[in-house]
Image (cartoon, rainbow, N blue to C red):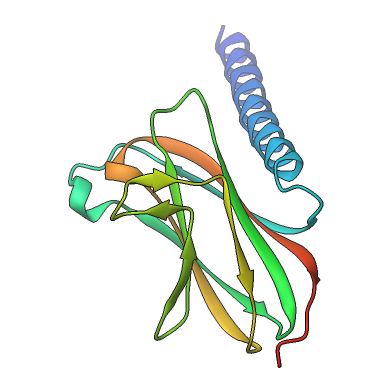
Length: 149
């Protein structure tokens, strides 16, 4: 009997892990299709439970190196089965360079573009608006080279 329960448990674990990874792959593919003619470089997966304190929503933070003279695009795609709307913000030690959400107007965007004028490490932060439960994929893509001078 215990061998039977162990087998059932293993099947449930394998099924759950496969369905989670399949959902993530779908989000990445949808996000890729929404970034226009930009070339996919990297994605960032996030998943959070509802925050107990909406003013201090948990965030996922990443460091990336961006190169001078490159036009980049950042976009986000939310899991439609969750209520949370992801906010992706690009910044460095001193400035915020862009976000898919403008707090003063409450307007959300599918993506924003960044024209890198200095090779430097930059930071990406992804959190969910109002600390809602959510799952999303943020994506970094290359659009084209430009002359930064």
